[in-house]
Image 1 (tube, one colour):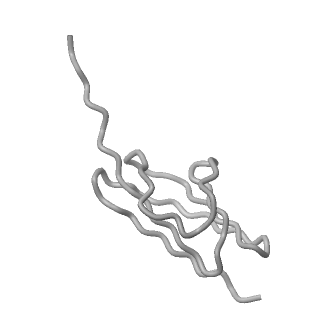
Image 2 (cartoon, rainbow, N blue to C red; image 1 turned 120 degrees about the horizontal axis):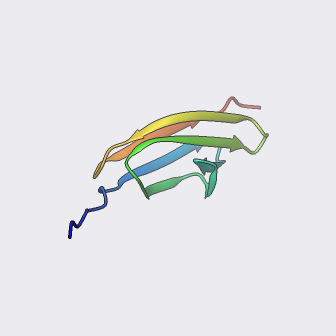
Length: 77
C-alpha cells in the first residue's frame, strides 16, 4: 500500500485600501484584511471588489509552508 502525503499548504494574506470583499478561486473569503489563510500550494485567482464596486483580479503563486501577501490600492472616490 502506498501512502501519499498531501502537499503542505501555504498561506495568503490579503489587504486593500479601502477595504474590499475577497474571493479566492471564485469562493468568498470575506472582507479585507484576511490574514494567514491556509491555501493549497499552486496558482490561484484572487478577486477584490471595493465598496464602490471597482474590481481587481490578481493571480498569486502559493508556496508550501510560506506566506504570500497581496495588497491592492483602490483609487480614492
